[in-house]
Amino acid sequence: MKYIAEINIMTRSEILDPQGKAVKLGLHNLQMDSIDNVRIGKHIRLEVDAATEDQARTTVDSACRQLLANLIMEEYSFELHAV
Image 1: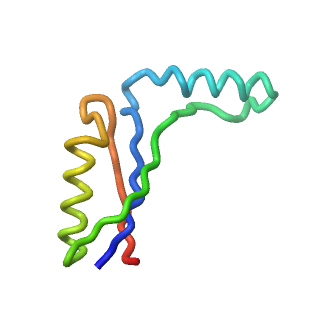
Image 2: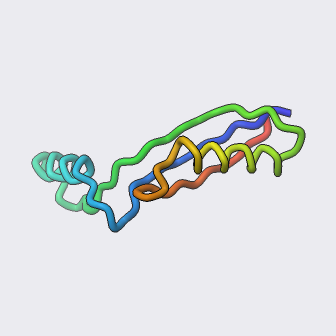
Image 3: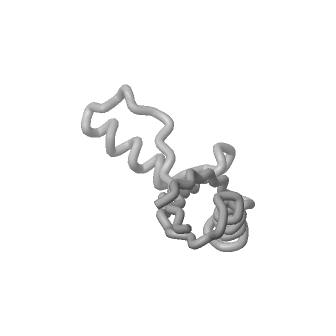
């Protein structure tokens, strides 16, 4: 069975996010002062062939831990949908 994984990777909240800070300043320059605490992350979508949903979750979790996310600086979450 095929599954679609929607993965979100964000820099940990205690880590400085210079890209997010630059975007926040740009938004404030556009008079959007109500926007605060901007964080920039990654969104990854991938397909997984697996016999069960649990097997697909294990595969996606392994991919995140071993390659897609830097666990020292980032945290991740994902949703899995059957195709």
